[in-house]
Length: 380
Image 1 (cartoon, rainbow, N blue to C red):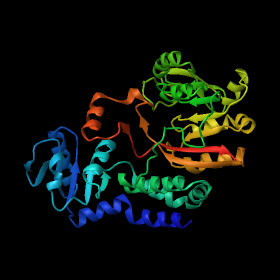
Image 2: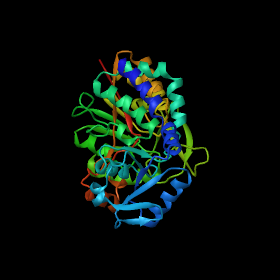
Image 3: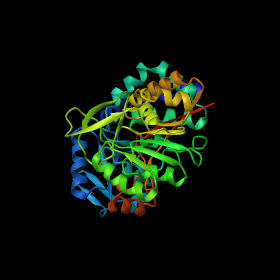
Image 4: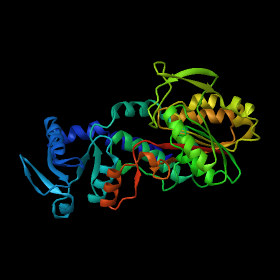
């Protein structure tokens, strides 16, 4: 409880808009680190400065020189800069740049400029303290509680260095791993990366993917790795919906989609396929996790599977998912990890350019971002 109270104090003190206002008002010099092409990086600095931010230093892969009224310094020369930058900004959603900035400036506060509506996140946090406290107190280990605090503080402050990412597979942590021979439901197969991992562990995997393009790709992977993939959506009742195939991992059901997709419930699927049991359910269905759980009440109540639920598509996922699982199985306990996409999880997401950046700065080739929190649940 003491750490939860400390989190509230930190959230108040480190709100992104509060810190940004102080930097602008006091004209505190800051740095901007970018792996963009130099003309684009310079233009971005000028945009920042036009908004009142005193960007005095640009760190890039280019040769050190001066540009207008700020300096441009090569990554290799930052150790010659004194004093070191206290605040380093990166592009919106440029998590690779943020990781580079933390490596180059290990003691700096690395902020993502204008990433998301941090004030709205702050308001949601403050309006739901009782719900969040209940979730916090439900978590079974220190790592979960540390992850919980770091996730909210990092997203409200836009400070990448506050986040705490798990050094484990995306949907697998100690104590929440399906055994060999387990029946696994993979909701949101995308390119089949995670389903392949489950299959290689000796599990019987049933995957679901609404995006036709991703489904077709996953079918090839499934044939090579011996798992099942269905071009079906999962929900709380059987019906038809529409979606627009994109081949990306963020496709959602939408009334104005170009193609019709069948939606079933997990309970119906288990019954119709005569599955002998369900041991593990992984869901990453772009915000429809709660709806899928509503259609899986009988399966969860009967088989007591381990759950790995994406809890970052909606800000209320932390408590709505936790509370719903508790309503089905009051005997469940919970853990939380801030995960990331490794190459093994989603090989299709990696480009040659990304690998070049990782290699140049001796970073592990994975995408660690602000989102990707996974809520784990298991029976006591």
